[in-house]
Amino acid sequence: MSYQVLARKYRPKTFQDVVGQEHVTQTLLNAFAIDRIAHAYLFAGPRGVGKTTTARILAKALNCLKNDKGNPCNSCQNCVEISASRSMDVLEIDGASNRGIDEIRNLRDQVKYTPINSKFRVFIIDEVHMLTTQAFNALLKTLEEPPPHVKFIFATTEPNKVLPTIISRCQRYDFHRMSEEDISTGMEVVLKEEKIDIDDQTRKFIIGLADGSMRDALSILDQVIAFCGENIEFGKASTLLGIIPEELYFDITDAIKSKNRIELIRTLQDVYSRGFSLPEFVSGLNKHMINILTCSVESGEELLEVSTEMTERYKEESQKWDPKDILRYSDILTELEMKLKIVQQPRLYTETTFLKLLEMDSTISITDLVKKLSSQMQEKTDIEPTLFSNLEEKDSSVYASVPSVKEAKPSQRMEYKQKTEKPIRISDAAKGTLFSKIKNNWDEIVSKVSENGTSLSTFLSHGSPKTIDGKRLTISLPRKYKFQIDFLNKKASLIESTFEKELKEKVKIDFVVQHDKEEEIIKNMKETNPVTQRMLELFGGKEIT
Image (cartoon, rainbow, N blue to C red; front, side):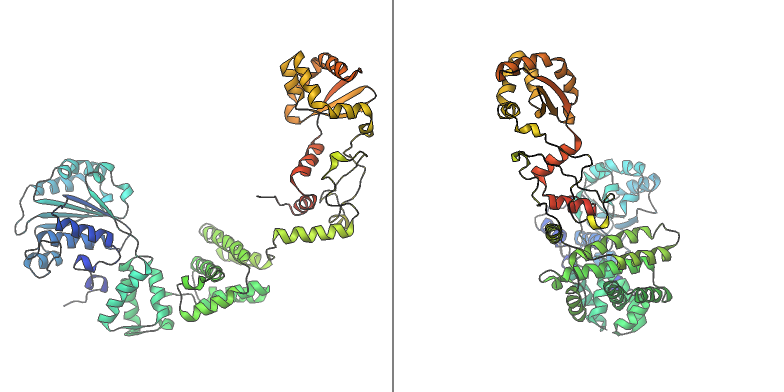
């Protein structure tokens, strides 16, 4: 007898043998127990998780001659023929190669014939999403009202491509991507039966490569057994599978941590000379970074999918790194992995990116930076950090101007300087009795203006008295109310009459737009500490909440 690959040799024969899909198999067993078998099923899910296998078990359960409770005996004539794919009453059709309307018409013609040796004629269509729209439409009527001796089972990896009218006529079961524990359990049965000895590191690596597919795991295992024999060691298996040694990843992170350019370039040269794929290397390094990050949290090492020895090494490595740095590096590596697919010189681009990683400084906490800047500024300047915190309470004139990063000399960039260029000035007239009277009674005066026009009072409430020169009062409004100034100037005489009535003195009023710098300082007084604001200006950052 010719050799049979592991994935076929150890294919489950009963619902209980199907690993990781208990939500599907138990439902089907319950349906048999209460005799509620549907006429059409749709099995959807990733590759290699048991869709077609479950469909065959269901076909055997429907036609088994010894057991009608959902557990095929696998020994009667019908079970043997279905398992060997030679039953005349169970037709398995590949939707990819039989996708046209002519094939579906032929299937529809076969539906009317009664089964030869079985209770039901079962039609299994694999990759059903490959059928054309015309083929789906030709199947609709038959699928909705099939003869009582016919059952349909559809399997697909892309249920979104199946017409909704088809899905609505079926019972849909979604198969899950298999967990690593489930794949390990399935592999253990195979290894025991085949008398194969395998080390823990190779086992975990094969499970990782399988990506949730039991069939893929057994196919890789089959290949490794053919190369290594009955005793599988990671050293030999890695040669076959092209596994990139973890040591290379640790060499890269050590070079980045120590800022060792020579060692970094040498390690990358080793990767090229050994013929490893650059995208796979970058992807592996990214996973290596995540393993370090995972170990930095409490009990994080329990989540790693590596050997015990490697877990201890990652635990030790995580103590050397700031998690924030690892996150930054991981973002850059993810971007590198994507761009390697489109850049013309991937090797050069990879080297440049890794050198950038090496030159990056460590992450600094914003709190620590603010404290440090605050301490330096208090030592180097006589101006208190809270200069503007109670500006409105000061009677004297205040001139304050903070040089920008571009304007300031190096010696000035960490301190406040008093300058006379474009100062923000609060007039000395603030000491005057009339101006004080206007400020103190501002809200009451504004409310009186409403007697001369409600809109005047509303517009005026957005402004504030700025300066007074003799009997000429200047009222400023924020820039966003600029359009109201023309209206207020036209009605100035009405407003002035109200002011004269309330103040017992004549005043002339001018309306101006509030200066941008003044708005900014007032906003900073209310929202941002000057120390924090200066730090944001120096480093081009932004304050987040």
